[in-house]
Image 1 (cartoon, rainbow, N blue to C red):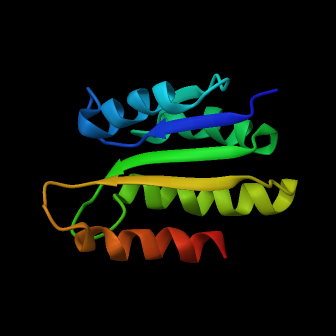
Image 2: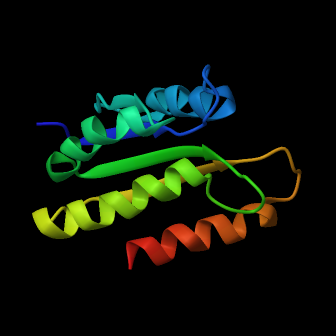
Length: 119
């Protein structure tokens, strides 16, 4: 059973800072062997959705795009909402939001969007 999944959700082919943060996070997770997956296009959706009923923790590392969630992640979240409701998924969600701004407040709207999705 998979307990923790970390998604790096940059649409960039090489993953950028989101991939670096997702992989670096593993260093700080004592006694946890997370599964790290790319969420960068529609081809990844089915594989990741299938993991959701089995996990305890989901971490999404993603860039900030115009103070919001990138469109491919929004599309995935819409699918995941219906998928999880039908299967009674229950996991904690953590978000690593990265941007090129020095002020953390730039990420506030994006984090509020994830908060709303959780509700």
